Length: 486
Ligand code: G6P
Image (cartoon, rainbow, N blue to C red):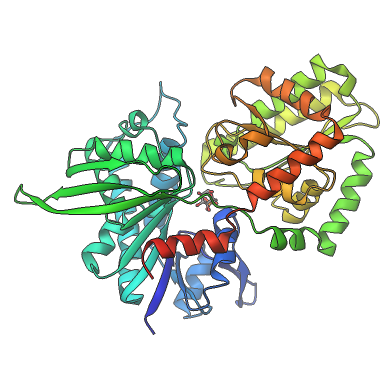
């Protein structure tokens, strides 16, 4: 049956595991986007979620015709998928939008890059074709993230009747960094996105960056835009150059800001499951009555975990009174380990944590308790016992951890938040804010957080939790559906 509401995202709500006896079982997929979207879709039981088969077990499920209601997995050739996901989405687009290039050496746009770009185009085309097949006339389609930036344009070609939105969960590159991409590729990216009726970003800053990048593009057409302001939509008027060199019809793409938040009740229920209580008891036994500085991230270059550890080391050096009285609980759970640079980063994080423990640790005190496992229950237990949360990304689309910790922390928690996090726009008034590159300022902010009077801490936590839950996933999703018309 054709669907009225469709979602397309690289990662699906579930993945399969293949047992030794050949049976397949479904498990819930991981990551922030998946939990946000799954929560939002709980209220949309008729919606169809199209995603990629990510593993051999997923592909096997597709081949055997096994599926769950509301989910369609696409069996994309593994080599094409690897080029698209690792080679372009995570190595080029992610690096561009997060300004992560080590510029004397990167980026290099050569023949190999163009070969991968062709795979990225094919992977986007596969999603567009599946959506075109599954959508009812006039259906609403919500495409997610930088993996699928070309889908709106490709889908509009196939099905001009559909109403198409695209949401970017990352930052959008500033125009000068976006212009590092070859002109024709940058243009395809921007015009792929402009195929949508509606574009969404977490913050006003990322929406404005998209609009300034799009409006100076001149390869495939002309565009003129205005940024969203004080609750009003922004947008871009554009005309595309056709093959005969004339301009096509003028179209309009709305650009809006939808700052994803957390569902407080859901999160508190998750954080009080018996499994989390057990982890909490174990952590409490290890930490004793010491204060805690908590962070939880993917092992992700843009999260700035190394400078966070350096700041903690500086805190222990310049404020020796904290030695033996504080513990840094750091969870860095594995992510994108197919990329060498991520493996090297993970190793550097572990080795810096070990160095700090060697330098300051004593018989009964381990200064950094680091976990590089994917252990959501342990992370939630750490949230509950956080006195201070350290969230210092160099650049981040939103950062939901900054919103989750104040909601579940039991003792009231001071948020040390960098200006690079998308969450900074909403949380800056009640956080202690830092420049993510300034290790000394971060160390001082940690000290200020640890010494903040009880009452002020509680007041700030309350306001942070209110801001964090202002737009929970279900409302975030509905707002975007409404922007496409009823
Ligand atoms: C970022 C992206 C999401 C993605 C998540 C995990 O937050 O914006 O789209 O789900 O990272 O990344 P992964 O590569 O593991 O899907």
